[in-house]
Length: 100
Image (cartoon, rainbow, N blue to C red; front, side, top):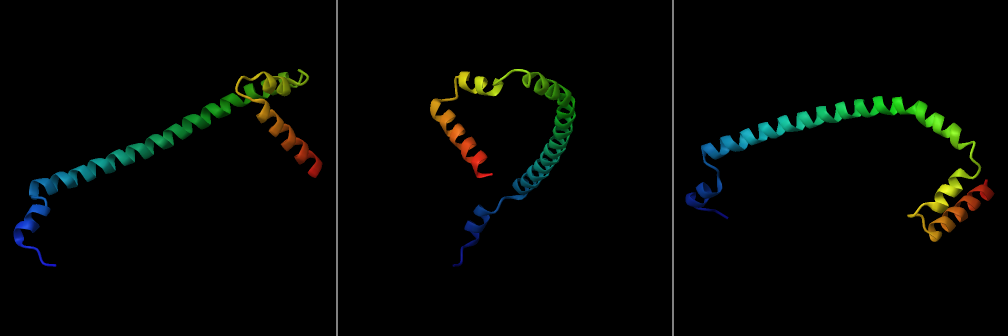
């Protein structure tokens, strides 16, 4: 299909618009680079704090081990854990332990 020149001129951006489009692309590339840099920095901070948390997690685990049935009690008393969820977990745990 052949179009006349008027249609072609209408569809193609003028020089100012083309320059703006190219600058938008450059700015977006800068934003993308910053986002990548931010992701790398966020990962470093998360890793730093995860390492700092480890002794606390270990201490908590040791304390929890001194309380009989801690996790059962926690699950049973949790408001978002339904009976259906508990039965499913129990059946899954029993099935897993008997299949090994």
